[in-house]
Image 1 (cartoon, one colour):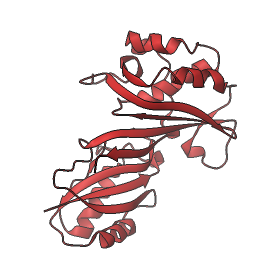
Image 2 (cartoon, helix red, strand yellow; image 1 turned 90 degrees about the vertical axis):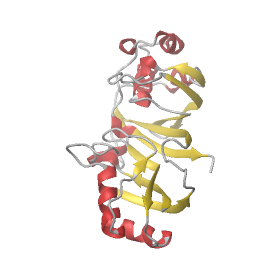
Image 3 (cartoon, rainbow, N blue to C red; image 1 turned 60 degrees about the vertical axis):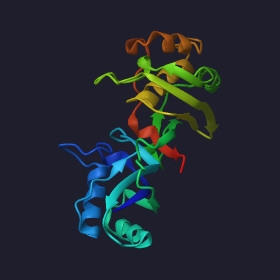
Image 4 (cartoon, rainbow, N blue to C red; image 1 turned 135 degrees about the vertical axis):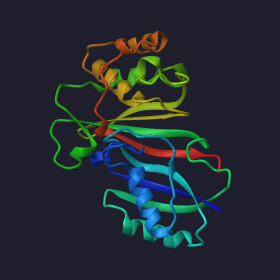
Length: 244
């Protein structure tokens, strides 16, 4: 038995998420189909975590078990030949037998892109936003995020997670031309967490809220007090970090 680790990217525009569901395309199902054809086995790939419908990934990690002796190079070429054009495998590696893409993960980084004005290119990977936004107060608000906090105000609570606590290692905004880009790194993320943080910070950038509202929201744990959930299309999983 072998454990193989995959590094993959995908355009989430036409998917209902990573996780297999009763209806709609999922990355997990497409990958499972390709593995079955290539390796002649019934294989269920496990991802580092779910991504929402419409969310993209540049560095998603998955693993699977196989009895096949096929080399990692041939598996890489074979999967890319079988997968649709909106999923690409960048790397296939042997992993330790106790490796688990989800439970072995130590921290992850996400990026959210807001495009001010109308884009032509990359329009499926940015939130197109027309009202005026100011970067300075959004950057000021991000300063309050690093550290361990209760993110009850910044997650979808159906179902209620086992814990609302996450440790944020880094969070910051940058400006690149017409885009405002938010990156956040943490040991774990809750459902819709990044999107709700971004939606709340957009209200700060418009002057509807103050940057000082953010620590108050963190203390409240009240989802109804935070901002709207930003659209999924602007969000990408950048990478997942492991000890080995």
